[in-house]
Length: 157
Image 1 (cartoon, rainbow, N blue to C red):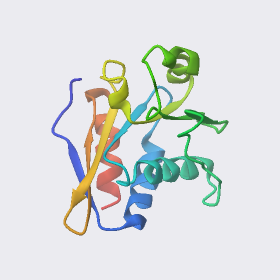
Image 2: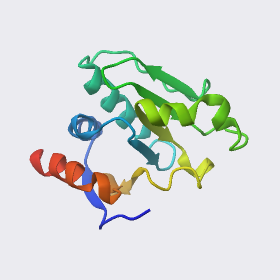
Image 3: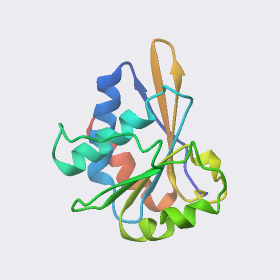
């Protein structure tokens, strides 16, 4: 993955995670893949939920975690496919889940991308980890998406 220096955002609380999702959502486009990484409880699902709700323009939209069904799709203006690979047994299952098609016709959000490390090398990687009393979001962005993601973050302060 060819990227510039990762962008970073400190997230002091859950509301900041939601704001980050709301900030990133308008900058995303069809074909983007967001690989969400971090330990359990770091906010991967919360960030995905905020992106989906913002794109749906519905902050009360039910956005369940796809942990047990592995993928949840949303028919929005920008179709969104939310994958959770935590329970993935083998990379070959990704074909059965429709990942290739999802990557061509919408936005793909991937939790636990490290379960299929060779598949997401061109993704926008967001790593969430503890820092002080909050979390740090490090965003590694491929060159083709860097300007729009950096601009969205800069505009939000």
